[in-house]
Image (cartoon, rainbow over all chains, first blue to last red):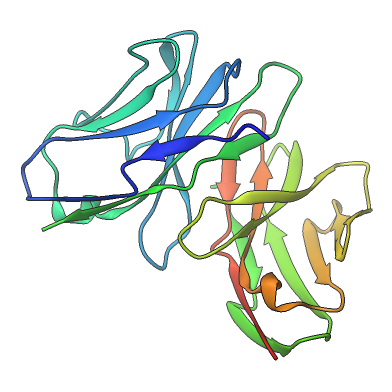
Length: 114
Length: 110
């Protein structure tokens, strides 16, 4: 069964450094999402992406964040200058298309900012 | 503001026993409600999805109920197994966005 994959599984970085989290959505899916989950807290929506542009973003997704689909398979989340409070699990999800509602989540990347 | 509240926060049950998890929401307009299972360190996996007109839906030993009038849902786990130990998250969708509950952590003990 196809699944969403994410790399790396764990990223440790110094405060102020840039990080790029990578996701490979399910092939032929058209909608892509990033979520984060701070330890012990609920999952929070960050951004949705369709047709090579952001379709919606939350208030968390400020100018420090950006997303990109550089080729036909990868979907990336970049944090330009990490802060301590960016430490969280980051989940990528993908959805097939209009008329389908199910988002399939990847296993997550644990980001630790020191 | 759209909110999803779950209870209890956590529970411990013995293998083979049943349990019921609760979800109350204020999301509007309502599109659908899902229950996800999230194993430790993994992404959420959808268990059930319910729309406005559905009252009950089952997936194996998982049975979800929905009362759209009172904006409440429950997830019942029958004959629990050790592998049911996980966080169960209630997720409600409005027209275009998902709102997540904080989850109920279920621990099944032998």
